[in-house]
Image (cartoon, rainbow, N blue to C red; front, side, top):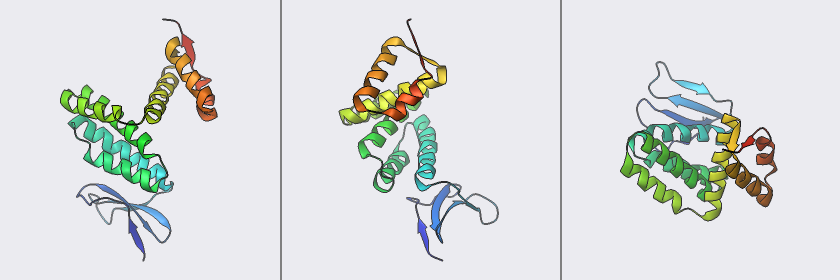
Amino acid sequence: MNILWHSTYLVAGARHLFMAEGKFLQWDSGAKGNGVTAVNEDYVTVQSRALLEAVQVEGAKGVGTRSFQLADHLAAEGGIHRGDITAATSLMLSVLARCDGEVEAAARFAQKFRSCGRDSIELVVHTWRLETGRDKGWLPRPQYDALMKYVKQEGRSDMALKALLIEPRDL
């Protein structure tokens, strides 16, 4: 059996993604039995989910080592722009660290976010606004206008379609 591992390192009680005989499989090293289950998702989706889980765990603790490893891996293997994924990871880690009272860690992650390229920062900020607006159903008019300007300027029809359900509000 030809096995290709996609975990950076093995940890007891953790989930690891690997490919065997053309199928993505997930091994839960803390599970009873062999812990292997088939994954019916594409590689980028599975790795993105792993990144989100790492960010949720590490952001609350004020660390980001595994999160940035997974982000780099997604950039290298998943075709995602390194600056974009680093900016998104940094921002999410910063917010989670701040919410958990890890002020110094939040500042470090925010500095890493600010050190990303302007295009990556813009994409992440407007994607964040888009998702926030979709969750709430509205955005303050200045944020909505900035989002729509970005969508038009960058020719992001995918974002424009999602933004149709957002109501601009004057506050």
